[in-house]
Amino acid sequence: VSKTVLSVQMWERADLLSLAGVVRVPLTAASSRRSANVKPSSTHMTEMLKTLPRCKSPGATQGPCNAPKPGMLDFVNKAKWDAWKSLGSISQDEARQKYCDLIGSLVEAETGSSPQVSAQPAGSGATYETLLVTKEDDITTIKLNRPAKKNAITTEMYNEIIAALEQAATDDSVITVVTGAGDFYCSGNDLTNFTKIPENGVEEMARRGADLLRKYVNAYIDFPKPLVAVVNGPAVGVSVTVLGLFDLVYATERATFHTPFSQLGQSAEGCSSYTFPKLMGAAKASEMLLFNKKLTAVQACELGLVTEVFPDSSFQSEVWTRLKAYAKLPRNSLALSKQLIRSVEKERLHAVNDAEVERLMERWTSDECFNAVMSFFQAKAKL
Image 1 (tube, rainbow, N blue to C red):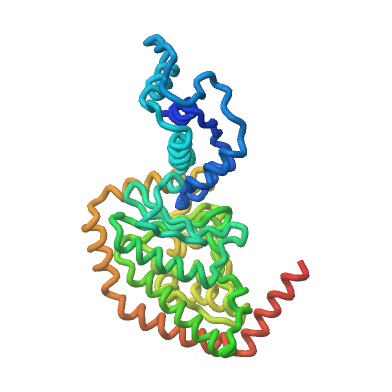
Image 2: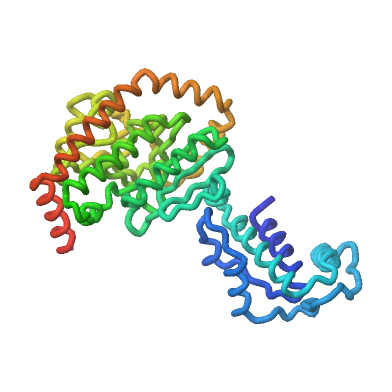
């Protein structure tokens, strides 16, 4: 069914309740941008209805249907008449409640222009403030959702990504995808994380950060299903380093990959001190991890960090067509094969993660790191 026909059908469904005396609410562009994992509440929709004018349709009356039945070829009006007839003598309040529930479902249906947006919320009652987590076509999608901040990762976001990965690990999806909202994939750590110093001082902040980072990277190391990164734009810092723990990395041609650790007085994480030299060789890995070399998508692909690069104009359609085909493969075969591949190095990866976290904890308490981060904020303030 085409989108045009679908829209007409949805409007007809909405009109069914307007016939019982409930106003007709257009599916505006603003409403269609609602989060895929936040359904509008009935209370909220009722309040919206109160602010709008009452429908002027002659059929917008309370009580049973008393209009003559339209002819067989008058399809639209016949559908409305049948629906009005089926409503019987329900009250206006009951009709309004049904209308609110219907509009909520229509908003979700109307936003189905891309594979991940039209999906239903993953899990039961799972809600996230910084992510959009959806499941459709046997694919769980974890979308970083702070586009105004270039999807920079806050402490809250770290915890939510860990929770989303744990949820995806046990749901009935075949593969899991991580991607970003907006033009950026992820700009790495939100450096305001370093400005929130607890009462116990910098050492306590470093300890908490280290525990969180260890848990975060372990969630990728231990993830039991095929894990795919759909890199829709520039990627920085930890969002780049953990890519070595993904099974596939698809990137748009305008994506870049940057790990400016020494620039900020820090050191590598995400097991990149092990995975990067293994993927691209020691010299190329050192260019990235020591000397802040930024890679284009094509360069990252040539070095083995990225699986394939796609034209930006067709990136989403090509990648999601391919992922949907992969998701039709036998679920257990994929998961068990992935676990066999990972089992060879899982113990080593955990050891590398521990070593990197210990080194970073020392870095975060150093004057060198503090001065580098402050210099970054000062340079940013001058822009």
